[in-house]
Image 1 (cartoon, rainbow, N blue to C red):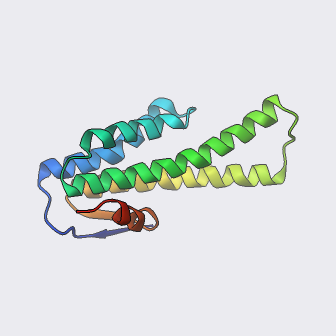
Image 2 (image 1 turned 90 degrees about the vertical axis):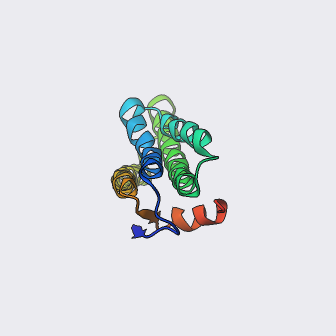
Length: 143
């Protein structure tokens, strides 16, 4: 799910801490705003805007964390809307809904674990690239 490698240069402790904090912002937001899926994205987005002129290592990891949270927001929002239409609308509980919600829960758990892992490894100054978001981040974030 994630590949650990060396970055083009060895980031100092300050850079490693900032990059690690980009992942921790979403973890803290999960704890604070679990029922509202946009809280995680907003926390990561604010941290991204605060560090977009930082070093390449920090910008790269802030971008990867932001892309990851945007995907989580889309999946959680669809599940939230579907759930609300079942509770307050005339939509019935179906097998596709149950399958989607199981998928969303598993995706959220795996993304949470990957985010904590990335925060720990990045804090050590190592480069973590998620299997989907890493290449996308490399296209977006230029040196």
